[in-house]
Amino acid sequence: MPGRFSGKVAIITGSSFGIGRETALLFAKEGAKVTVTGRSEERLEGTRKVLIDAGIPESKFLIVAADITTSSGQDSLIAETLKQFGKIDILVNNAGASIPDSKKRTGVNQGIETYEQVMKLNVQSVIEMTQKIRPHLAKSKGDIVNVSSIVALSFGWARTPYYPLAKAALDQYTRSAAIDLISEGIRVNTVNPGVVQTGFH
Image 1 (cartoon, rainbow, N blue to C red):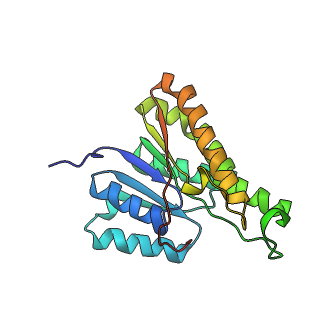
Image 2 (cartoon, one colour):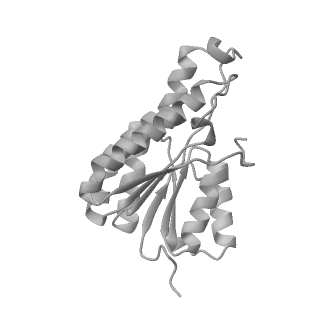
Image 3 (cartoon, rainbow, N blue to C red):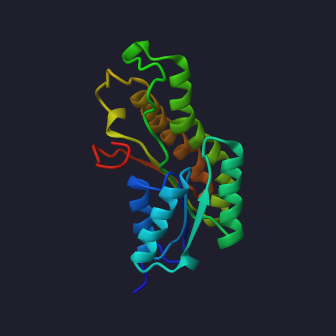
């Protein structure tokens, strides 16, 4: 019996471990061809092993080492996926993190450079990937899923305020993008996971 993602091609950012790795595994088990990406070669090898151990043939997944916060990393991810699989149906913007302040400052004393790093990873990379992948998803009538967090909702996080701020911005961007892109047949949604035991938390 074919899986629910049979024939689909999915890019899942931040899929070298944690929620992203499990998402890649689920999509692959459900029939999708999957591009797995992250910065750590070691963690990417871990995901490769998980996929192979689950019986996923190597022809069904692609490993791309890339920094999603860089234009070159984004371009490489999209280009290599198209070269390997010929199309893109799904983008899961999962890459994200709360980045520690370099001077160990907390709360409202955290530096602006920390704010810029957090926003670049959690929001700007999503905006850039959405813009770049839009024409490909318009062709396939595809989907974007933005992975946010429960901290974006109705309470603050005093020690590290920039992460919930970024995720709240991501939620609002998702709403705006969903309205804008539906005319091209592209659906955009967000999920807000709670506390999950991963390498990040």
